[in-house]
Length: 263
Image (cartoon, rainbow, N blue to C red; front, top):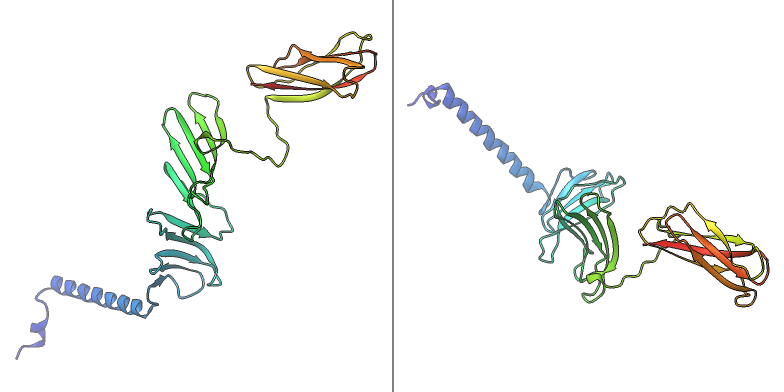
């Protein structure tokens, strides 16, 4: 009959290895027991409250708030065959992430709602330009899309912002406010003729407009065009100003509106 001591490993090293193997087997057994008691198809960091849950049915990752019901963020795969991810969230604090060159596509979670997703597209040649393009997407594949293109050129060249339709087609721009541009100036001046039927000018200066060529127009604030007011004009149009001219049959002071645009 073998003795109890004969059933032990022959040395301490072998005994330590067997004990470690036994501990690992027990640990795996406990993990399997916990997993089998969890909800089928759901793995989460806590049973309720604040938690991160992986729903194996929808293959989505969800972050829940303290009440255990509010989904603060969700990340899941698209089902359109494109291999992308869709996200939704209720984050109270803005966050940012860094992405490589490429595009982000946006569409409703439900399939088939829009035919063309909205996109943010970044492209750079490295040494020539850097473009960021925003497209509106379209409900129907034949609908026109609006594009906003931010283009930066190398070597200190002037950057450009383009607002257009796809393939450089027309796109309406509706600005709910006052449009201001450094290549446009406008105003009014009051001119009192030096004598009747004598052209009299007023100088406008200090405009500081952007551009290389400049164009100006003027018109009198009057209903007596062709009778009392016989002429209005401009000369010397430049980035810094212009001369506004008025001719009328009397010496009555007259308001003249003017505008200058650089290109």
